[in-house]
Image (cartoon, rainbow, N blue to C red; front, side, top):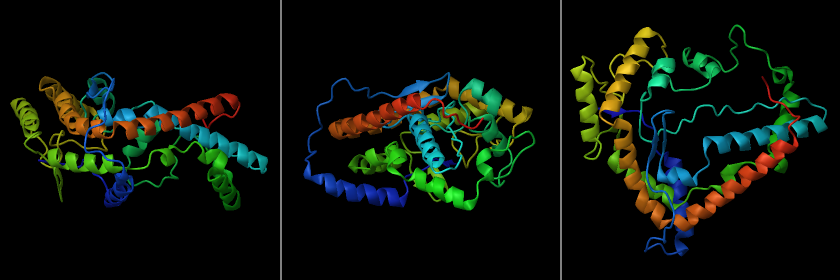
Length: 311
């Protein structure tokens, strides 16, 4: 069976290799002492999220929302000073999409509401049901944005404001560059979730999990999807109706029965533990920098609470 799980891009690997060499001056022959670090996989069967050991050293979806919203407010203030009204577009962080190596629906509440669609805001779900639409397409009932009326010259000014230091200070990208841990993680991940031209296939680690899941589906008269791990034949990512919801609920029942999400998440966690231990000092330092940017963004948003987003 195969899947469409994302894999590390070639560019990401090249960057990681380059940084690995740059950071190689520090010896990592012995794992750095680890104290008080959570090295387990946290699987939330209510909200459908998976937090792996490495995730605890990254910016969370909530962090991303705070920093991106602060960037938008900074852009709005900058544009206002230049005589242009730019209404901030805030990020919707209602749904945490961290699912680790788990694909397809695996939480009952999400299956009932979304079927096989990735859980997201209502407006995004509506677009998922109509693949191929232009980004500018407006559905009946959609409110026009004040930003749509801006001229191209005004948009150039707004873009320049977005690249200005006052907005860029909230960009977490510059404090979480890739390092040798990313390369190590990619290599370890590819061994447990090997990639072919068709996608990700089972490995000796994941095959028992997938076999149990497949057997459960067949026992209730449903065939697994040979092209997508964690799915079922007949599942469609851009259709939401009673049939898709019923199939998604069957998938969830089987995944719950065989402890699908926890078992896959534990496999991923086992891959990450030695990497986290080896680079604990660097990862901890990076997370502190991320936290500092998030704290700065929260203060900035509080100080400019009068700048309201679209909606």
